[in-house]
Image 1 (cartoon, rainbow, N blue to C red):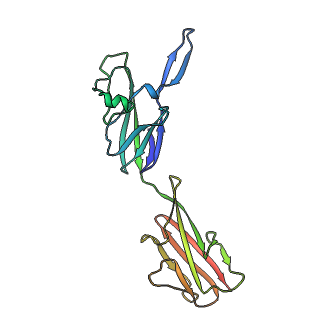
Image 2: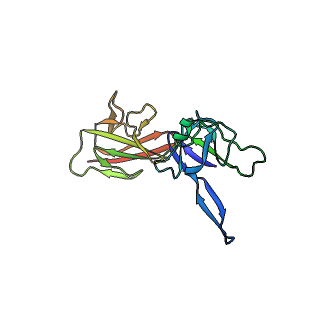
Image 3: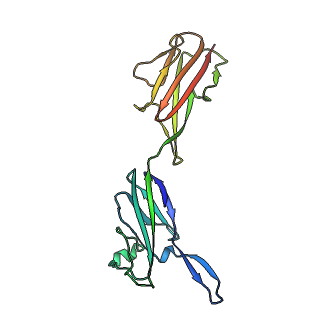
Length: 213
């Protein structure tokens, strides 16, 4: 089995085990010559790589399982000319005729999982903050604090979520900072001192600490 996130891609190959004339066994990538299929094309989609050396599986619907099948030899399903031109990638499972020793088939379960947030990156007025570590504005006291929040996801992508409705900002220093209505992550500086903001998005928490001179 293999896992793939929604809109993510996982690559799989078909490997054939052969026996040479001297009796030794060896493996060979037979992806380009295999018949590929999938049982639930609404859960995931399949397509050959440009060089046909592997199959790319793209997740479409989270919390589902799609079974990708591959076979070499004669399969039961009818293959049209257009299917062959497309690289013998079908929108349904492929099967071998029972008892046909010249047709071999394999199945791989693809688990389509949710993309989760693994960490948050936060800047204040363009300066990078460290989680739960105070940043000191050395030069002068800023009039406003403008946060920028970036979410890093399990599939390796990142997204600016500063104004996302699901981001929660908790101002723990109301005597130092005053939130600007209608502007998420933006605060007026009303006094000097230690400022602390708690930022929550999905399962991640970031504590932004700043020293206002």
